[in-house]
Image 1 (cartoon, rainbow, N blue to C red):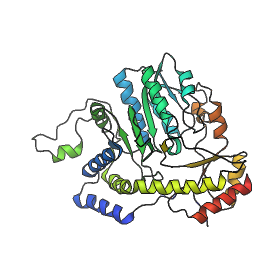
Image 2: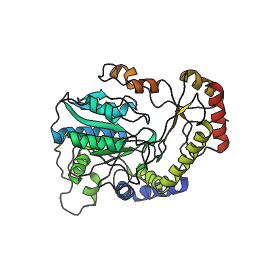
Image 3: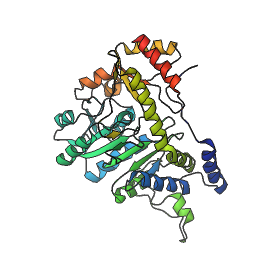
Image 4: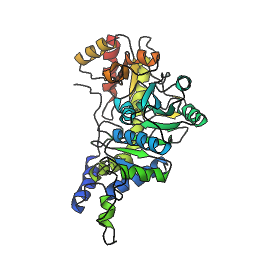
Length: 372
């Protein structure tokens, strides 16, 4: 039987109950259920604001766009980022005609503060930190560095739903989460953007609904005459989430901590089995980080050969991620990052999802250790 990389698990009856409520009320778009999810997310995370979106990619773009606007960044200004990430992270920088500058990663595969500091120049305006696999790396040091140098900090928390550092959910000038189909809190696709300032959240809400001054739900549930009139003061996008996805997200949130605990248990099985193998380097979790454990990553030599051999055994690992400089779009980007380059050629993400049994993990371990 095949062991897949990701197989999401849904509390199906609970999800259907929430979706049924949307269908019965005749409101499946942005509205009552998205508001409910936003409030639940604020209560869970402690973030001051939360705006439900169609994807984390939309959230990353909004974060860069809004921070650029309110701080007066110019085209060509720089954002320090990692080359070891999904391309959404760095596309968001290019969308706004800003220049990504790659800094190297540390042993946790997150941005190394010392390498970030080396890349700060006269046109540096922000740092984009990616919590790869749910790991927080040295996020606190990056945050302190940004504060000291007057830089904005965007946290790409696509893998970090439920990650805590010293008991708290990490915060930044903008935090973006993913609820994509295979994430720890899966829907079909959606995301959340969180700002510490409600006034910035208000800007995000307008821009996520094409720059329109009031969303459809508030206009249709309001009592004022002429509520069909609205202004359009910003050039925005259709980035808002919908109530069907929010209904699924609300159910997932109720089970998130339990699910993440289970993911850490599975990661512990892998560590117990692989930790003493000199041919396999397990990517560590940063001290003080209770990781959401979206990924369990190892590094091996001859990575591509190993994956192909594991595929023949019925095991489907993944790679998170290729060095973005391997893509034509980013081949020219400044910034040496040798550790990221080496890691990208050796990384394997082992199957990690809630349906795995100990026997499944043993089968993955047997396959991996046979072929390294």
